[in-house]
Length: 352
Image (tube, rainbow, N blue to C red):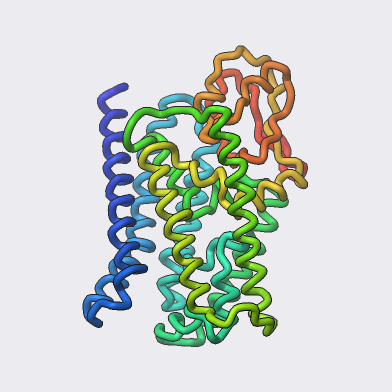
């Protein structure tokens, strides 16, 4: 590793560590203490959390993308990964900078992940929900309609983009929860320890978790959808909202942070409910990795760089397409192949 490369990786690791530590501290304060804190302390916590989730995240995406792109260009092609990073930068500017400025609503990012990942837009349509009541704290209640329009617009973008690009569109281009970290800080993983591939047993465990959390997400969404239409199945909506918050903190946010620290940026992607949904839609649109553009030389680089531990080499040796629900379409394998044997395609997105 060159001195320049070493310094870039060190900077990326420092940024990632700082981002993770701040997440633990600020998320804990924002979700666990702010309601009991004195007014001036609560205001400081909320302001800090919003700065972390918006301006600081965007700064890290831009700077991290620049450093990562410099690193991967040293190792060969970078077309697909460059497009990933540009997509995250552009979407972060819309969701974390321009959007909050125009709507005066700093939590706009809550509306940037469609169902079934989050059902807060549905909660916003239920007047008695905690999320609805918290929304009233912000000035300019006219933003109510604006953020819902924003949410449905984002949902349409994800749907249409997935129909064209497969799971790649959401998971490797515009996901501002785990996808951006996985791409922007890719050379820094794992933060602690050495990089390890998942074994067969771990893949099976994640497969079970995928359908378990997908079922939970669909249940939550269905519950709030019934509330929107006036079907009340649970009187204590506040308690139900708290259950969802704890689920988010433990199995989404904290789990993702731990994956980033000890495993890979894509750990959460194995069971992300939105990833599962777009993966199923990707199947419909013919998402696959073609492996027959040239002759495979069995160098194994595709398997080495795949963040989802997919056995691409086995298919490439036989010239068979890789069709796997775990594939996030990141293009790491495509860019790393020295013979340009691989290409990421869907029915509506031809070979590149």
